Length: 251
Ligand SMILES: [Zn+2]
Image (cartoon, rainbow, N blue to C red; front, side, top):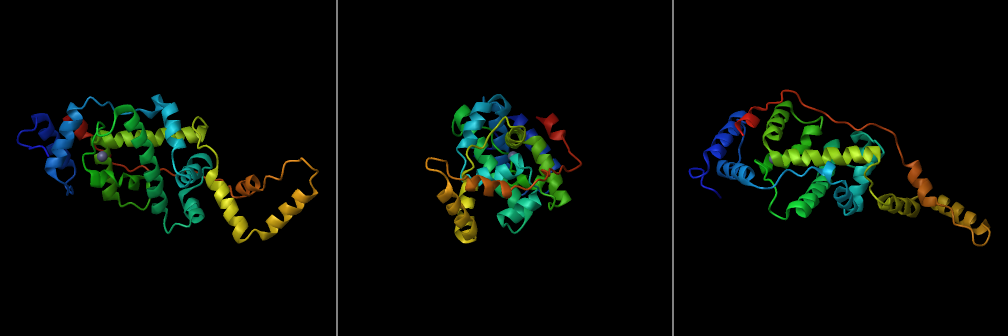
């Protein structure tokens, strides 16, 4: 941990500016100064995923089936958070936002690791707050907390980098320039549905297979069930008001 008394003046001043804009800050001031100093002196440029689409695509390909399913709901199928909650069986829409943010953080971590190496990336100024930045998009988030998040986002290059990754991924999935790979999750769900309540469909499929001429392809039961599960909707993004960017000037 850096000694704030010996840290460069610019880092100390920037830390004071940050604290002035976030009276509710409850983190470690020394760690804040150290993070700012690290970011000011680091050679690492913020990773811009739009310039690394191939690598972003690789990162998506390494996500778990659960993550791909979550991102597919919002990014590809356009399912609203409330509908996604129902489909995922989550207790609240906040859980949907949180789980999606965890998946998108893995995309950013992969990009940073591949482009800059471990521990070389930018540091979050307030990890406790930055780790909950997903709440900024959650309509259930209190307005005063929203203002803290926006102040943090304006000041924290690490979190702005995370937001850039999220924006690029969701936009890429929406316009088709990024893909989530095979619908593994959908197949798992389809098989589960068949096992639990789809005895009739299974029987029908077996009959259909039985009547097909020798050498014909079997019916694509999985694809049909996946299509039935699709529900149209919109992707909700909420922006808070009152963005303060005084900290940018301090940096
Ligand atoms: Zn941050």
